[in-house]
Amino acid sequence: MSKVLVVYSSLTDNTKKVAEAISAAIPGSELASVDKTELDELKDLSGYEAIIVGFWVDKGRADPKTLKFFEKLKNQTTAFFFTLGAYPDTKHADDVASSTEKLLTEGGNKVLGHFRCQGKVDPNLLEKMKKMLPPDHPHSQMTPERQARLDEAAKHPNEEDFQKAAAFARDTLSKIASK
Ligand SMILES: Cc1cc2nc3c(=O)[nH]c(=O)nc-3n(C[C@H](O)[C@H](O)[C@H](O)COP(=O)(O)O)c2cc1C
Image (cartoon, rainbow, N blue to C red):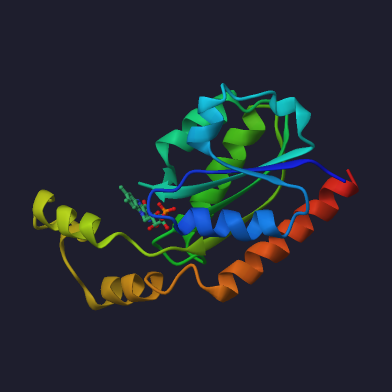
């Protein structure tokens, strides 16, 4: 059986829930938050057959804790997943995926694939943004399009996302087995 580590970073639990769905679909996998992994001084990562990293999108990239983790992740077999406020079928989400893949590949890692889904945006953050940003900034105003996107994000991750995440996990597992 493959020994797989699912490591995630999550502020408001969206990514954590997806990580749990992924880990549950991989028998014997280990699930850890990136903080815990840091705490353990990145216990020997070479003991895993694959490392699946999950993060939340922060200003168009992986969140800072994950970026720090990526600096230490070298020459491993990997896959990744992320949650974001934007729709998953946008250029914004494509850019996150391709820059992450590039970063991992540059670290000598093999990337087996990725999964993405929307995740509700913390209402406190929206309130803060409104106060801090200049009035002409796109994120300080509420347009019908933006409201629709936030309303949709508020429904995620949902049961369908968890099922898709589990399918991604099984697909990754079969890729590990055939590598
Ligand atoms: C500070 C901050 C910056 C964010 N930046 C982006 C962004 O650039 N693009 C995006 O689509 N979503 C962005 N989001 C939304 C989060 O990525 C999204 O809500 C995510 O599901 C949060 O995951 P978590 O619950 O695991 O923390 C941002 C959220 C926060 C708090």
